[in-house]
Image 1 (cartoon, rainbow, N blue to C red):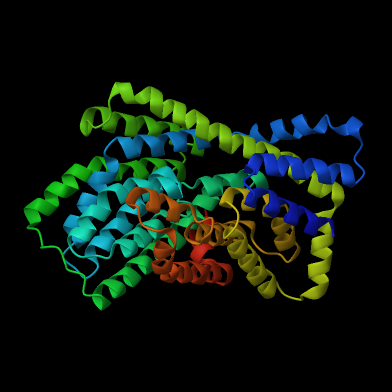
Image 2 (cartoon, helix red, strand yellow):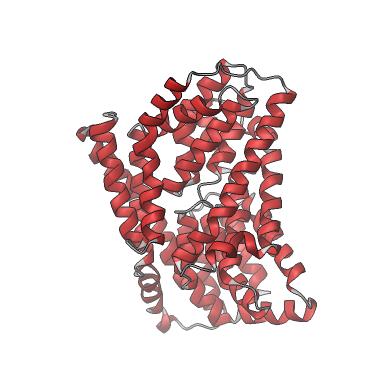
Length: 427
């Protein structure tokens, strides 16, 4: 009963426009008091909030947010799409594939769905529509490509999951590589099919000299994910150090290589990063008290006991988790869902002997579906604001991508080699 009231309270407050942090704080406090927690114990609120954000893992978040802002202003997006267009533009769906490929590389830099969609969308849509691609389809394709941001490492979602569960960030990042690549390949295949079916024009093939020139211009940008992921997996950097080094590298590219970033732009970029970091960290801080309240009310233990009695295997439990996350993603923002469900789903999976790293990827892919599903669908609104298209028109063309993401979540859940092939070997 208490668990139902918590979820109902969160849903109602967020649907009426209350911020995620305020919603979780209010619901946690109300639940704590209703469950018999005395007013004299409210000093636990600041303690739990501070403890939640004081971990070293979460220090990488502001640097990844900064890197995303620097990339969007610093010309990295344009060079990546230009290289993809030069290599793929002459094939069926080549321009849509180029946009998806650019999003995959952007995802390996920023870890943010919205940053990927906004950065590539501003450049790719004009080129795609010039060759007859339907505008809503263009928006849906780039919105889906942006959805790879929370999956392909480095991922802010995976960093949050690691901080909440005390799991190795490197293991989670390694586990996200193959699902991210497979999703990108699936998106490309689907966009090629739609392009062939609708007879969207192919771009003119470019001579190899021009392709090499496009590669040369994009080479330094392509090195960013190598620095981030390679440095972490080789043990040179921690996640936080890799984010800081990569942010500085992207700053140098924007100022001195692409020359699209100017010193006068930096105060605004830094201030935007401060604002974004404050919002994210405040949400995470309130989640610290929320987790304490759940433990205080013994909700995870009750959920584990009920589901263990109802199901004899992990299969229906994981399918239930995927279904819950996809449905919640239609109404709530992904970070809020993660913070609400991790304290319940992780102990539940452990009770059945399910690997936490594998569960993290399953949850991450399931949550990424939410950026494409109305009424909340973040990337749908990003693309609508960039192009002026209607959200529901974009959502219609995003349906195929949504089905591919749900299928990938199921595959990750029941084919451990997809996630643990790399993730199980790196700690």
